[in-house]
Length: 308
Image (cartoon, rainbow, N blue to C red; front, side, top):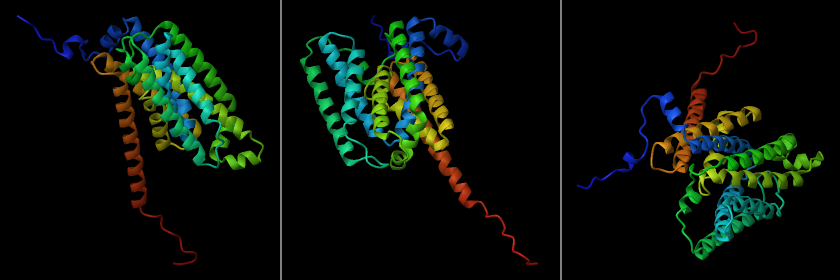
């Protein structure tokens, strides 16, 4: 007699007792490392992503995310760890994009054109590296869509070091960077080094993208770079509060995504993206509802001077 097992039979069952389930999940070292790495990535992406959305450079972030794929494929072809490819290609692409100065608050057409060119060339190189590689490519789904399996303590340590350096650098330039992002022309007149800040931020964005790609995969980096930041900006316009909300949303979607992926056969990238999108839709609807109620509220009665 042949017994057929479904996908659900090969994964742990959710007992509806959160304490018991979390203890059972964290009994595995790889899940502990996954939560550590996911927490680091969520904080890093939440902060960098908030500035990226404010600066209207989401297209640049999207391109750097795509470039991480050929970086990982090239590293695999050369027989080295994909992490090296992530960081080398993302930071290199960031420097190329930074070669075109931004013009005005919305960026320049030349920057957008160069960014699109880098993205197309990077994807073409990725397909070439995959074709040239003659070995087993079973891990290609992990490169594209992310995986929490196989995250080592060494990788967590490297992520923590990269995040610490990146966030420290961003903290040093935070105030002038925000000024240059809001109004680059006025900032330049006031003596703010807008050009240097732009290049520095793109390098930091490339670093954050490379780190995030290891958790979400190269195709779903936007789940942590864009959506938490975009959701935060729907909820508040205050910079400090927006940064905090962006990080909080990133942590929530990462943790819930890890738990959902552990108890199902589907990739973590799907859950992280779905949860982040759901939170953005909820925040957007809440804001639209608040605006509609504000428009329908009766205007305060005007006092007529001296009238009975």
